[in-house]
Length: 351
View 1 (cartoon, rainbow, N blue to C red):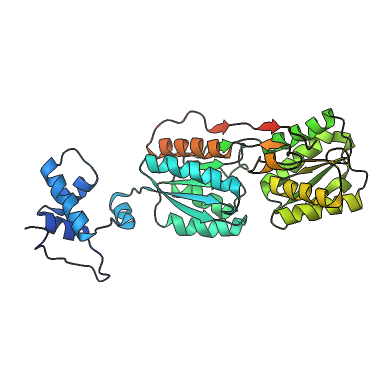
View 2 (view 1 turned 45 degrees about the vertical axis):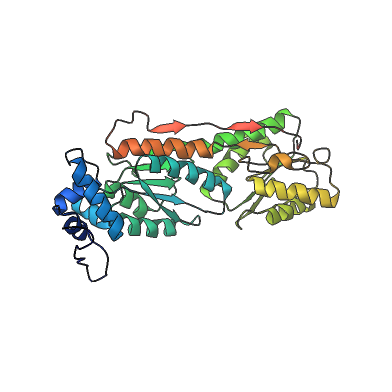
């Protein structure tokens, strides 16, 4: 039977099925399935007939049906807080490229920094039996921990480099969760210590969003100051991070703590907004007040003055995490469960 004359038996939805492809190619559904999976046992001429039928009929494999039939999937769920944050875009781009090259498709979920939204996404995505999970951080609800662990789906955590809470192991074998990231607390400590080394003594910490990674940076800031830490120099705002909020935080610091000589912002967009506002107000940076940020986002080196910051390896995190997950999904040995990619202080002219 030729593809031109083959009957097209459809499901009620009108979708072209594997059975349609098999009939058009003149082979059994099992042979058609094996040909599409690239199995070497299928003769070359049969593969050609199947691929021709696929092209002519416009057949698209049903990943859900394939997963049900084989208990396997080629889909990986990637949960990130925001798509509007360059930090996570860089991570996602690297992870997606790596997964695609290994034959996996990414299903992206955005949690908006809400643990309950993450839990709801996990419930939905895990019903489709994904091959693996990439999730941001360890701040899950108890139910989300149970979902990850109980699913048996390989999972890698990104952006943080620490163990989860006792009894909340997310690895399939119940051991320490797999993770790729760096110590947010150590990074916050390192930048604060560098400001102290440069002679700054009244150092404020200004933060937005107040997600767990921000709070870990604040812990590092406090630890570096030790006995000199003054809680009144912490300026926290739960609103989303932005240039505009950075400008407002600068004004608030100068109004409420005029003796401050340096401000450590928890993200570069806040710091960049503060630098722009300092220009408007005539505040000389760093002569009157030093400004530093976090993440080394695009544009920081073009500010006046160029912004000092903590460079974080988000692209490398996405790459290494995806590679680790691919190895887990393939059943390969992953001897190092916790990969610390570190960070770098990039000191420019703003301090």
